[in-house]
Figure 1 (cartoon, rainbow, N blue to C red):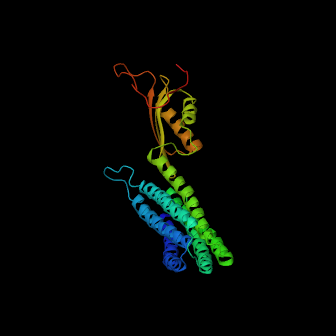
Figure 2 (cartoon, one colour):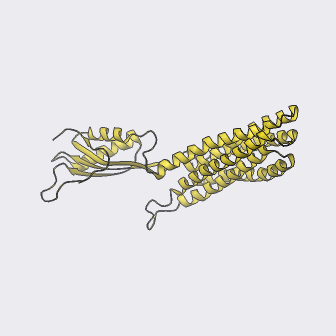
Figure 3 (tube, one colour):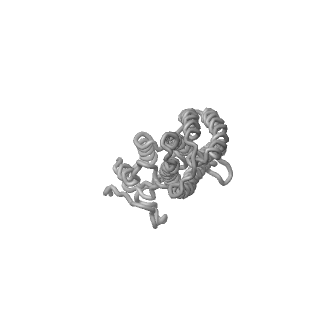
Length: 303
């Protein structure tokens, strides 16, 4: 899917959320409902997450130049991490307010909460559908999607709470719904912070075992040793690999490199690879290949 299409779907979701958020804050204050206000606060972060996603998409599309040799592709990951952190901050506030209202429950207009939450479900279903049409393999877009999806769950909880308050007068249901919302925020926020953190720390992509890749490479014909093997993500959906490969004396370095690149591309979907291929016995006077190789050294046992 094109970047322009992603922008259109995100902008459509932003328009839906922004319009309803203003109405919900007003109704929440009138009804005295923490659940509605917490939903509105969540919707504010939804709107902010979409704005961040739109800005990040524009930055990531800029070509690499100057000192930014990868361009600004990781702006998308910054956006995803900001979304995750905002969810965790809101979790703390809504948990505090929810517990306080459990102890001393205020008056809540249950019917007003119920009707507003029903409308909120419809708005969030539409917004969720819009963002689901964008490219969710991007952690940036996924961050915005998780915001909206969690808000949908929150509105469902608020609808139930409004109905309980309206029909039974049990006003603590509103605070309980707010705590449910906080739990959902915590789960989604931590997931985004963890995944974006892995990219910033240049960990291998989830599901990729560097040691397994190293063993597979060193098992190829003519390969004697693989070290300095690094696998990382430039941004979501774009991984890279670099390694130093030693081959048997007399082997064709170019042919070996082509074979290894094919394995990495076809079996591990790694297309951005940098392989330094040398003969295992250095030329006289050049010294050793690497004095202090990084990470695991994979050897085949070949001479």
